[in-house]
Length: 228
Image 1 (cartoon, helix red, strand yellow):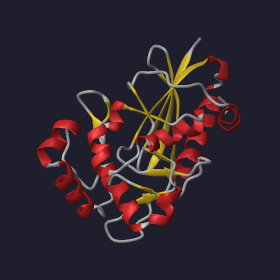
Image 2 (cartoon, one colour):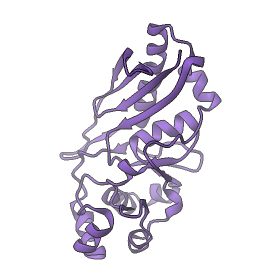
Image 3 (cartoon, rainbow, N blue to C red):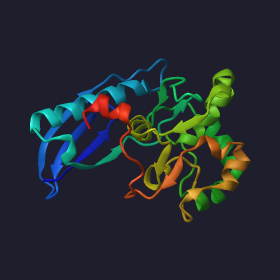
């Protein structure tokens, strides 16, 4: 028999559920982790906590169900949107992730609106510039942590970091990417106009896929860590 696994990376914990192909939940596991607020209005998390939670959840549902790894047909990811994960050239995390509920980027959002134009920004990205979205967080790090920004080689969203750890692939999909203020939503690709005006290198961003695409297989190191 074949099975599917869903991993939902939340703000307070990651839930992993094993389903049969009829959609029946066979086993589930939620692993919680802390949220840090180093200043009033800030919200950060350690991306390694997400990966540890995903590994523990995957191991748990396989053990609880007795399902073998060979019977798993696929893994799907969902999770908290808009968070900023920065990696260096070796794929190591550079700083705690800035989360969707972080409110520090008001000034950067005004800068984005003035640079792109409010109407034009909505035409391209389908959203105004708001503190929850990712583009403002990128500008904040570039402005306030320039030495760290110089080391940045990859920008990922939270669930896409878990995908990277599972597969070694830097990628995202259109539903999450639509909340970054960087995606050309009508064309379903990164907006060259927005990236140029905000001086953000497209090479830092993951490849954009449709939400249903199979992007990669499980990497050997991740297989050892998770039991997949």
